[in-house]
Length: 537
Ligand code: TEU
Image 1 (spheres, rainbow, N blue to C red):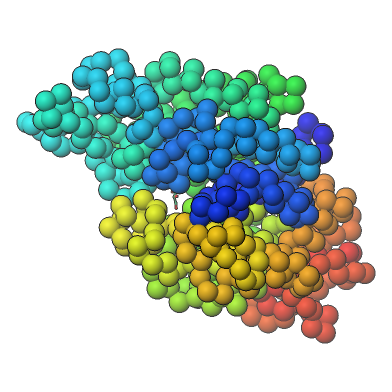
Image 2 (image 1 turned 180 degrees about the horizontal axis):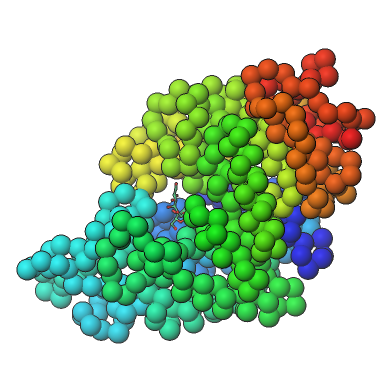
């Protein structure tokens, strides 16, 4: 675990602290809760934890609205708790990755409060994008850009006498004003924040919305066909300067810190530009996640991913879900199979038993591929999306800003079940939960699955154990094997093969001496549909 490139084949587990475990019983998960569960995470076999933001925040967007990077939100604990957690995790051989949000801060951040209080033209406003509106009275926004959370990207402020004043830019919610990366304070402050967390033992950072911080200062409308690198607010060429500078800081540590990008881009060439050897170490592979359960689609995604990453010598990453997307059990259980990550809809018919079989197979498929495996908390329990949350309990700005038409992301953020029965299914011992857990949540509980060799949890544990113990899986050697048309089969190293059956009929298996692990029992030596197996060949 001490190799300088420990991350190249790591298993990285995403903790959404609000929903993981709640030690103080107030209904919101906390860092003490995570600390109590470190033995569980160690038994699962993960190498690192990535925490979504734990900093002081009004939680207008689940902590992605940071008011103070140098403080832990009181709902989660204290700075001392974070330091203790980082150290305690390391005692279990588990590293900590923190989340950094360069594109925006909270509207409660002191810089934004200062900017709001200052008159137009004041330097305090230059750390953000304040601009006069268009039209005779300035009552039209400076551009027609659209927000990732629906609607426009500009909000009008009140002038000194309460009359309507300038507008400010927010690519996300109005509570998340965008920073101006042309201002020297912005880079300097981030540099200090990175060192603050590296010095407290963070092994790396996950970079939020990494394509977005650079903007065209001329604020043009988005053209129909933007030139690569010249889009007004996405994937601009100069954004790479930020990460090149961050990489230098990361490399200045005795154990270099890791840069992981949330780079949401369809074009593989533009994507791997973030992975050049003086930039990020890796980025989330959303292409695979956005594909339907279809052999040709998944094979195509694997092929292009492996080729693109080999060219830049960065490890591919395999991501089945995160705190922004529909849980895989639910996605893969949808007959229409258009479960791209944005395709959240109310009332889509779902077969959870089917989805569960496929999600198990997908877990074995991704765990067998060369590169880094990401696991979002609760996916190892086979949790489905909670689709019928009471309207009054929903919290996600994505839901509200769509006028309620988009279900939003609360359904994959419901507090985890730890025990079959008891208050909040073991999330805490008071029964409070910031989002209600559905009846039947206890069936998925870690304790309900621990002793069942066929459980989701034990499938994950065993797959992660084999990934670590089998030399063939530790290496990078990968080759496709020809099999049935609707099966994916590949060889890893000298003596391991993985087969996934996405067809309608049972599939024959290549010659083998042993079944290492299977997502479903074999029948007469054949692999059932929607199942995966690892073989010793
Ligand atoms: O997500 C960035 C992003 O692109 C999202 O808008 C994404 O399109 C959406 O969540 C899809 O469902 C990151 C974080 O992961 C997300 O939780 C934050 O809300 C967002 O940044 C703003 O910080």
